[in-house]
Image (cartoon, rainbow, N blue to C red; front, side):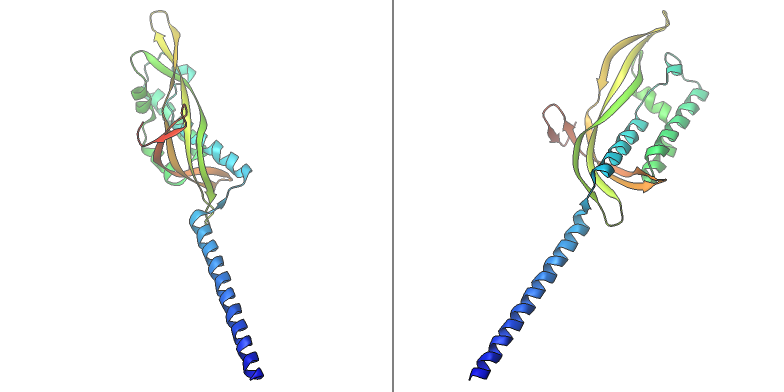
Length: 210
């Protein structure tokens, strides 16, 4: 009887150990799955580089007249120079689809659409005001939701006097986008982005419309 009892005791121990091992394997699999799904944390220095890339990308697309074109009707040469300047800036901060669309973007046309009556946009700054969930994926990409607040310096051109009259700055609404960034040419660059929500810095609220 004692031998049978001892045998049953060891069988129970083996079953318990096997069950524990299965639980450990299952937990490890769950963690692996979660890491694959949600990514891994992004170090602070990489986050700083990613932020610079996002702001640079948004400002590359922002409408702005160089000082030499203030108060001037844009010639074809001026438009070509603006387009080349835009693409140089985009090259610095974008890659993949985020860079490719720039070849079909008419920067001068967008500038004139953003300007109105005699007003001109002669400067722009940007800063991140919304930042959520930066994560590093298994393929090395960084995914993050971010919103950049842009502020434009506005003037009205007085053609008769040949001078610029300062106007109130134009502060745009904040669009929060899903950004995907990759390393290219030794730097972090925006590879793709899509509108996610809108953000009001005044009250810290997210919304579905501007």
